[in-house]
Picture 1 (cartoon, rainbow, N blue to C red):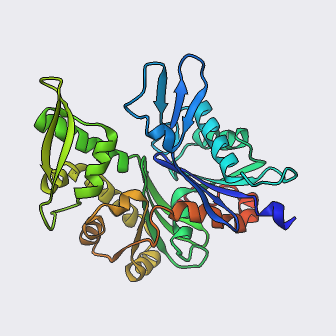
Picture 2: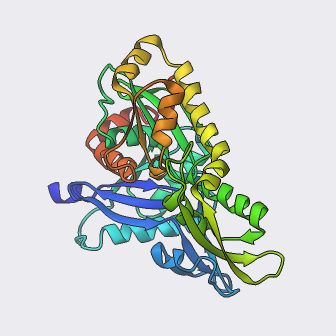
Length: 344
C-alpha cells in the first residue's frame, strides 16, 4: 500500500512549463508546455523540450502548439495528450500492478468553474484516478514554506508565464486574491513589440525571453548593459543584428510591471487589518519564473512600503507545494474548493 501511495502526483500545469512532483521523490519531470503536432495525420510528433526546439523551425505540415494560454487550457486534446506523456514519464519505473495515481493539479485562482472542470477532465483523461484542483498561489505558498495552515496572514505573489496570482492566505484558505492574465509571456511580447517599432526588426519568442533574462530590469537599471540580438529586418526582409540596452528593455517592460504592482496593491487594499499587520511583519514573498526579473522585488517593496522576499526556489514553488499538498488530500476531498476559491 505504501508503494502505491508513493505514486500519487502533483502537477504544476503551467503556461510556459509543466513540472511533475512525485510523492517521496520530489520533482521528477520538468519540461516546457509545448507540443508539436502533424497537421496531416493529427499525430503528436514531439512533446516538451524537443517540441520547444522546433519553434520557428518547422515545415508546413507540423504545428508547434502551446496548449496552455493564460494559465488555462486553450487546446483540450493536446493538453490531455501532453499530460498523459508527462504522467507516463514520471512513472517510467512504475510497477505493472500499481494503481492509477491520484493527481493534485494547480489552477489559477481566477479560473472559472468551466475552465476548472476542463483541467480536471483532461487530468483524468491523461490517466489519473482522481484529480483535485489547488489554486496556484496556495500551492506556491506551501512550496515557499509559508505557514498557510496557521491563523496568521501570508502574502504570496506568483508570477508565471500566463498569469500573475496574488493572494493573502490564512488558516488553510485564500482570504482574498487577485488573478491577472499579465505575466512573463507579456514581458516577452512587450520586448518583441518594442524592438519591432523602434528598429523595424522582427524577433521570436525565444529571443525575447533571452533578452529579458540577460538584461531585463524592473525600474531603473543599476548598469546599462548591452546585448546583440538577431532578427529579420522588416524593411529589407533580410537577417540583421542590432544592439539593445538594459535601459531600453526596462522602459518596454514598464506597463507590464505596473499591472503586476497594481494587482499587489489592490489585494492589500482588500486585506483585513489583522492580516495586513501580519504581512507588514512577515513581508511579501515572490515566486514563479517572472519573479526572477532583476529589480522586481525592489520595485514592489518601494510601491508597497513592505519588505519583499524571493522564494527559495521560485521556479519550483508551485510544483513543490502541489506535491506537498498530497499529504492533505483528505482536506481537499472533504472541501474541494477550499484552496481554489477566495473566501470573499
